Image (cartoon, rainbow, N blue to C red):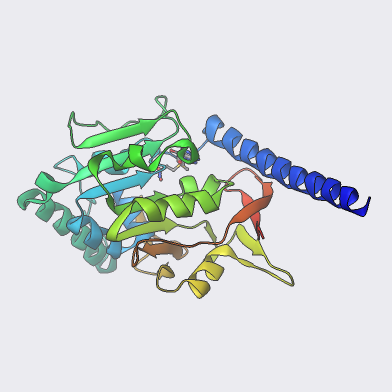
Length: 293
Ligand SMILES: C[S@@+](CC[C@H](N)C(=O)[O-])C[C@H]1O[C@@H](n2cnc3c(N)ncnc32)[C@H](O)[C@@H]1O
């Protein structure tokens, strides 16, 4: 008799855990479907948010995967020969910062860079009503759209081969309720020595919004990852100049945090964690995860 109760208890519990996960998944999918996003960041914004390491890695890359690419502005900018940061009449601090970027982009066009580069960009939707950068017709670019990342297989992303550079700028990582799948798949599609840069939701220079509930405390998921898997995950604060030049004024913005993933070994044995809370107060959601024992 006790056994029957026990089996019944386990079934009810696992069913309710499963239905909580499904509910959170539907919530996240609804936000992505609604697509009320800032989808127009440019390549210079990726540089500002991900830091100069992003440009260094781009220079060495053969396959760039932009996960959550919005209107593909950053990709279109890279493929358009005249793209640069405007440095007309700006302070020295900004000039050095912008010149580094402009020289690198120019060198991409002078060197063999584009003969080896392939790009895959994933976005649930392309928002035609907003400004669209002109995308050149090229076989070097594959656009994956109309499908959630979580439902997209590694094979589909790897049609140009393994990924050497992965970027996620307020994209899939920021909105997904299934970060275990997202991180595991990011790791899987990376080439040996490949790198992923994930821009984290940051408020007043602090990472917020994604925590892991342990027995006695709640910690930031990204801090927990970098503490337990330091050879794979690290957190980087992008301090450089964090200055934008906007309508004649230098605007100092908060520093930005980036989760960096380096593929140092073939497999990542990440313990499964599941989403138990998901709330979206309008912008990036707040999420709590729990280890699934
Ligand atoms: C806030 S926009 C950012 C776009 C771009 N990175 C930028 O900075 O302009 C979020 C992007 O991520 C995509 N996205 C978020 N979650 C997704 C998911 N689970 N599956 C597919 N696309 C997703 C959206 O379709 C959109 O393209």
